[in-house]
Image (cartoon, rainbow, N blue to C red; front, side):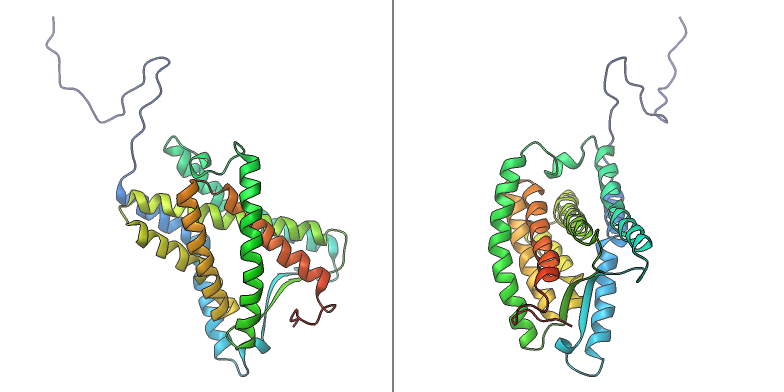
Length: 275
C-alpha cells in the first residue's frame, strides 16, 4: 500500500452528500471593510452630503428658518409620466444597499430574518410600531416647531410634487423606502457588525444614533438632535426586542404622516410652516 501523502488544505473540503457545506466566518478586517463600504454607498455618504448642505445653509445670508429643505420634489416638472419614472427609479435604487446587506448576511448562512426583518410576527410588529409612531410623532412635531422658531432649523418641506394621480402612492412608497433603508442598515446591520467587531453596547448606540442624526443635518441643528434622540430610542428598542420590524413600521407611519399630512394641510392651517 502506498504511503499517504500530506493533506492539501489549499481548497475547502467538499461536503458529503446531504451535508451542508462548511461556512467560514469572515475576518474582522473583512467585516470592517464591508461595513464601511455599505455605509459609503448609503447613509454614510448621505451624512457627508448633509454636512456639506448644512455648511452651505449656515454660511448663506439670512437665518436658517428662512431657508427650505425639500424632501420629495418633482424630477421632471410638467412631464408627469417621466417624473413618475424618475420617482420610482429613485425609490428602487435607494434600496440596493439593503439588498447588499441581505447578500452579506446570506453569505454567513443568515439573512434579513436574523435582524428581525421578516413576516413571522406581523401583528406584534404593527402594534408596537403604531405605538412608537404615536409617541414620537407628537413630540417630534413639537420639537421641530420649537427648533425652527429658535432659528436652529430650516423650514422642512416634506413634499413638493405636482397634483397628479400618483402623488400619494409615491409619497407612501418613499416613506416605506426611507424606513427600510434606515432601520435595516443603521440599526439592525450596523449594530450586528459592531457587536461582531467587539464594540461595547454604549459605543454602538452612540455610533448608530450619531449616524442617524448626521444624515438629517441638512435640516439644521434641530434635525440632527431630534433624529439622534430618536436613534437612541430605536437602538434601545431593538436591543430589547431583537427586531427591526416594529421600527420599520414606526418609521413608515411617521414619514407617511409627514409627507401626506403636509400635502393635505400645507397652506390650510396656521401652525404648519411652509416655504
